[in-house]
Image (tube, rainbow, N blue to C red; front, side):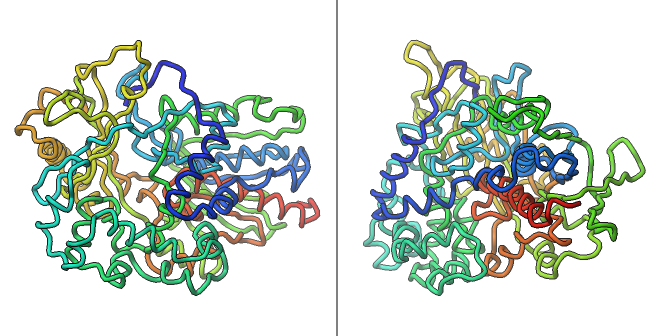
Length: 562
């Protein structure tokens, strides 16, 4: 991707809401608008719970410096607390927001973590607007990408019924049904069968759920499609034409339907210059005595935030002394452990990482079981820095500006940059310009398989898959690809998984207890795994703000005593 150098107008809240209303109207459920806005909006401002500056002298530790931990620190600073963020990474900021720059000028970059920002994700837009960040639409005005499925190359405008139906063992009824209708029946139609009140439960974490919603939670995607009468051939066709959804076949049906409910893959944006600019905005605000974002709050009432990178937490303990929380951590450059004592702690670690932390005494049994077994999905991305944009050439293998190509090959999907789409008319662009191609974005088993290949072999497979999808001769990209970068999230030492994604019944069994504080309401939790929006900035930011509010409420109930 290329960082635009021209001003881009962010959509206003009114424009975003109008886009959402139009999408809901087209889907036949306009009544969902209020529920979606309500449940995706940020929690109330923390100063409505505790007055600004009231927590002066209170020492708060935040374990994990991703955007969930940063959002919590940003909010708690309003109350005057002294906050320390312990972050394991020492080479970058952002956690699973990971923008990689191929050049010093940050002109060419790729997103290896959180990438897309839907118009409906109110909490994400709250912070984008707060920090005055600029965004670019990722929506391409034309759909000319490839489908390469069952050794058959199509453009997305070609007929799946004509070219792909004969390749699969479909039932007579399926063969007689247009593809769009089959997909609507698999997802949107099922949403519409619920009342608006029940649909709203998709965006809530509750002690129990309605009987109408339970089948979405207790069956995996494959089981639900089978119950709807889909043949195995139709399920295979779905997996091929949309392999990212196909990677969810063993996951809770709710994981897929939740994203359709709020149109998470339509009308999407990214932050100009890289999504890492959001965590960097948090970080920079921590360095200032009076950040402009706090507006009318006097600097004397603000707390402090100390961001300590390279601090790998190894233990969380409840002290016998006045409910203090002891955190043990290790510094990269040191062989010994260090200890700090806090009045309160927010743990913003993924449970996949928290699993390795010593916890004494144990948290509640359900919380410990969730740490042990809550499901995380693997993901891998590989980006190519290309010396020319072969995909934009007006040829049989190109004429693509933005969007995604899908394939049943191991790479699963190819993402194309949109910067040339949004260039001003008076600014010339050329397919001979360099550009960054996200050559492979795969989930689940294909991420494991490709991710564990020798790097040279992995590059060869990905390059050949891209050539195959585009109908290019073998070796065509050898002279075009100047540099590559791969991030395999299962192998990232501080994460060991891309994002949480529940298997059947896990939302029922664990999500409510995962949100509950521990150690006499002194340890709280944040992160996308605790949200209804797994894998999205929305989930991380919302839970960070919510955890800060939980902590403030506990402080108030304790009579402000320490």
